[in-house]
Amino acid sequence: MINNTSLQKWSRLDSKSLDNQFVNDIINGMNCSSFEAKAVLDTVYKVYGDFFDCSQDLPPGKTKFIVISAEDSPATKLTDAKMVSVILTLNDDKEDLPIKQSDGVIALRQHRLSRICNEAFMQGGLLTVEDIANRIFCCGERTIVRDLKTMREQNIFIPLRSTIKDMGRTLSHRSMIIKEWIKGSEYTEIARKTNHSIKAVNNYVSKFKQVVALMRDGYDAHTIAFLTKISKRLADEYIDIKAHCSIVPSRQHELNTLLLKKKY
Image (cartoon, rainbow, N blue to C red; front, side, top):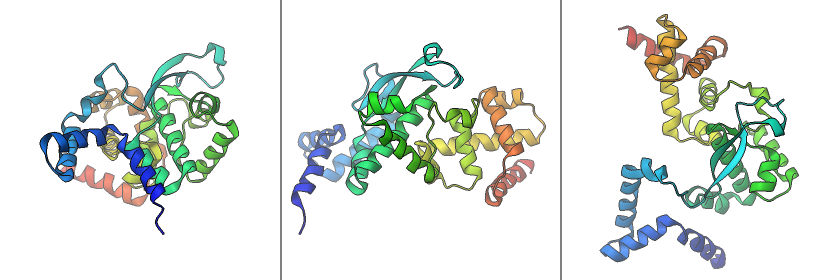
């Protein structure tokens, strides 16, 4: 027997999204089908998507938080630590509702936990277990600790102030993506673990390949940074990864193929 009440619940939740409101307005205003309305919505995202976050008002589901700067050492006292403002996504109907529907509350909380921690880190900040439990999710700290343990067992990286020391202060999220790539992880898996888009992962890998090619040609870090339009710090990280990290044969083959193409 189908649980219609449950189906109606997910339908009600989905109907509250701005995307659904836009689709309904197109259907009613232009007298077109649902398929055509969704095609219009997809086109709007494709053309204007990069400009959606340019307004001063935060989009629905996002909020601004003050967190500890990632530049500070973990040894720095909280009272002396530098603070930065970051924008976190607390709710994203497109991502969150399918996860809640298919995998339940715990999986959704862990997904959101990964997302906000990576968003804070990408903007130069670091969340703490206390921040997440008391200021954001309004749950017990033990709940967050259990979630983090589960995610570590799944090899999902979560950047927190308590763990950043183990990664090293200079390790950027771009370098972490590259380290996953050289281990042979697929783009979709890397995107899921680091809460990045596949396009972003591909862009970081392309930059890394450029750095390796210029490194092989004998350029120094300053020149590599200038030619690839990345920071000197990131260029140093990429060079260090290539020099000291183990690269699986398939990824090494990709790098060798690229270098041969450039040679000829």
